[in-house]
Image 1: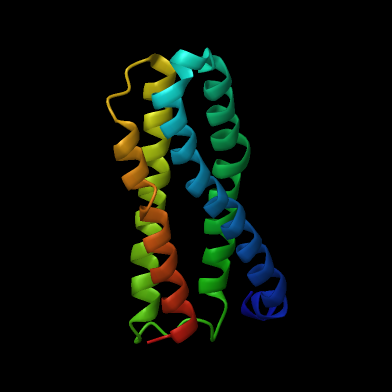
Image 2 (image 1 turned 90 degrees about the horizontal axis):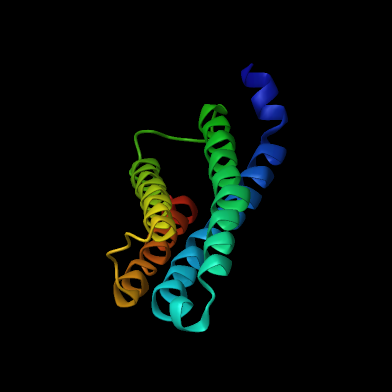
Length: 148
């Protein structure tokens, strides 16, 4: 099995990066949709449009890309010689990925609240939460590239 993982390593890494990019696009965009949904949808008569956009972004792009990111990431972890667990970087990356996954799930719950009309988060709060994936992305990239 380890020979196979080593052989397909460039493909696994490529598919992991593609999945991460798609996931991050959704993590950046969905909170912005929430801001506009909360602040403008009712007055502009766009409530259903925002609900549809949020639902499709989460279900069609974000969920599959998050699953693919995890799948290809775990395959990379299992590839011999890729991760040195005695270093700090795999642990900081892992913690940031877990936080990113929590954020994804938090967004999914907020989408359900918006759909049900029970949202209690303001546009300003969504704007602030929109900074979290950027901070996590910085932590992940520095961890993987610098390998401290």
